[in-house]
Amino acid sequence: MLDRFLPVWIIAAMVLGIVLGRAIPSLAGHLDAVQVGSVSLPIAIGLLLMMYPVLAKVRYDRLDRVAGDRRMLATSLVLNWLIGPALMFALAWIFLPDLPAYRTGLIIVGLARCIAMVLIWNDLACGDRQAAAVLVAINAVFQILAFGVLGWFYLQVLPGWLGLDTVEAGFSIGTIVVSVLVFLGIPLVAGFLTRTFGERAKGTDWYEQRFLPKIGPVALYGLLFTIVVLFALQGHTITTQPWSVVRIALPLLGYFALMFGVSFAWGHRMGLGYAKTATVAFTAAGNNFELAIAVCIGVFGATSGQALAGVVGPLIEVPVLVALVYVALAIRRRIAPATNTSATAQEVA
Image (tube, rainbow, N blue to C red; front, top):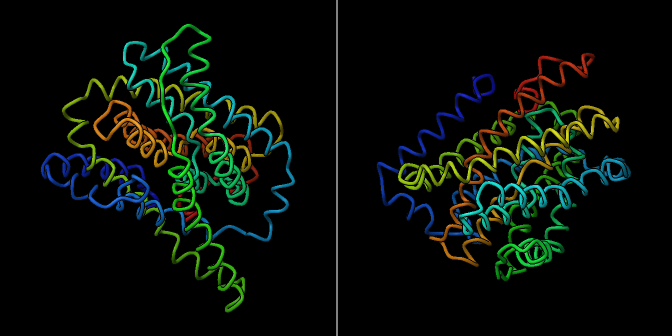
């Protein structure tokens, strides 16, 4: 029931979050009272619950084979660190030329490459789990090394070259490191240790056939919980500033559609196969909203337009990427007919 009607439950979670946020005005303050790296603790818990079962499924003994696929790695790096930020910069200026705060927030969202929620989208779309783990780890490293430099380039250098307004913004390396360690490090270590000691104690067959099916649904429960909390935190904003949300949503919709479409077409043309192509596409289309929100709040303040753009990001990303999961599965039935075409969330739960 959970797997078959997942879109229904996601929409219900979004509605429930908005209703709770409006009905209980103090709820957002309570949910946001305790934070991890400037991200609400309940959201952090939801993300960790989502990621742990997925990372517990990864065959860590096969990562070296994935890491040796230079075509896939090079494609992902180009998409994530060259095309993605440039596309978001262009869309932000095209759609929000008169709203510098929202524009800056979106550019920051474009710089934060996904290292968390992309794992569950990839799993639901029957992508390559090992490839996803490798690409997420690479993005985490690049995030620490390149985020500040790219922020300086896209907010100050490139606008100056183009005769546009520039923005002074200092990014905290500590915020970036905390985001990576919490939202990737904890579930990655937990998943690795679970598989290592589980297989050692009970064997691979028990681990794959009995243990993983039991913890698999936790990822979807964590997803639904995170969605409720996200929309509850922003329920007031969504209902009182709908036009602002729409203005921010338009470039985001264009970004997700273009990044996913271009990435999927590129991977397919290179002959990566469906599983790796889907992984590359979802890794490129998703964004690290935990980091983007933390940076926007830390630099510009919790009530700033930049912070609003950061929090609207996941509100748009969640339903869009859920839809893209089903788009990917439909493509899979066409380009990989020899595989099990009845794939749904049940395959990965």
